[in-house]
Image (cartoon, rainbow, N blue to C red; front, side):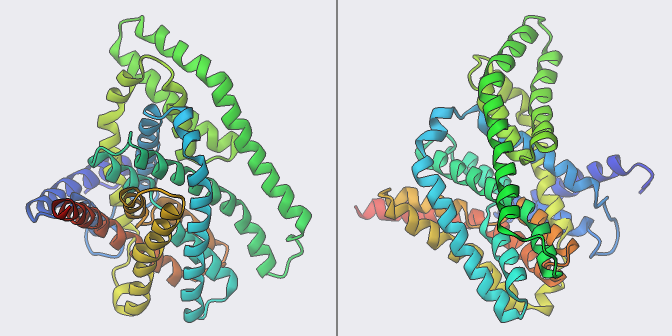
Length: 399
C-alpha cells in the first residue's frame, strides 16, 4: 500500500477493515464495535503487516467525537441541562473520586507511588463520549430523563478532565523537585481555566443563540443543500476548534454547546439529519484508533493487573454510580442505565495517560493497562446493557 498518501491510506484501511470485521462480528451475534477495535489492532504497530498513520487516525477520530457531541447538543436545550445539575454535578464528582481511589489502590500494589497512582486512577474514572452516546442512541435513550442525566454527568467529567490536564505539568514540576506547586499558583491556574470555560459558555449563550440561527436561516434561503451542510459543519467543527484554541475547553464540550445553541433554531432537525452520516463514519474511526494503540502482549505480561483494571472500570465505577443515583432518590431503572453507561473509559483517558507518560509522571505500563482496560470495557459494554435489559424484562414478567 502506498504510504505517500497517509490520509487516504488511513481512511481506506480503517473503513475497509472496520467494515469487514464489523460484518464478521455482526454474523457472530456480537457488537460491531468489537470488529472495529479488532480492525484497529490489525492496523496498529503491534501486529505485522499494514500500519496506519498513528498521528492522523486519532485526529480523524476526534472529528467523530465532535460530530457526535454536536448532534447530542442539537437535541438538548439549556433547560434540559440545568434540570439534571443537582445529580449530575455531585454524582460525577463523587463517582470520579471513588474510582480514582480504587485506581490509586491498584497503583500502590504495583509500586508506582502517589502521583502516578492519582493520574492512573483519574484516567479510569471518566467515561468515553463515543461509547456512552452510542449506547444511549441505540436504545432511544438520548431524549429520556436517564439520557439527560448521563449526558450531564459526562459534561461534568469532561470539565474535570480539562482541569486535570492543566494540573499535570504542575504535578510533574513538583515530582522533579520544583517550586511551582504553591497554593496561589494552583488557585490562579484553576481560576483561569474556569474563567475561560465560563467565558466560552456565556459567549455561546448570549452571542451564539442569536448568530447561529440567523446564519442557518440566511443559508437555507439560498436554496442550496450544499451550502446548508457546509454551514452546519462550519459551526460544529469551527466552534469546537475555537473552544480549544481560544478558551482551553475540550473539542467535545465546544461541539456540544454549538449544538445546544443551534437547538433554538427551527432548522435544528434538518441540521441533525445532514450531519448523521458523517457522525457514523467518523465514530467508527474512533474505535479503530483505540485498537491501534493497544499492545496485546500486556495480557501476557500483566494478566492480574489487567483483570483488576477491568474490574475497577466495570464494577467499581458502576457500583459507585448506581449507589449515588439511588441515594438521590431515582428509581432502579435510572440507576442501572447510568451505571451501565459509565462502565467504560475512553478518549480523555488516552489523552491524560499520553501526557502523563510524556511528563514522566506515570510508567508506560500504566498507559498499557488503561488502553487494555478501555478496549475490553468497550467490548463488554453492549453486553452489560443487554444483561440489564434482560434482567428488567424478567423482573417485569414476574411482577
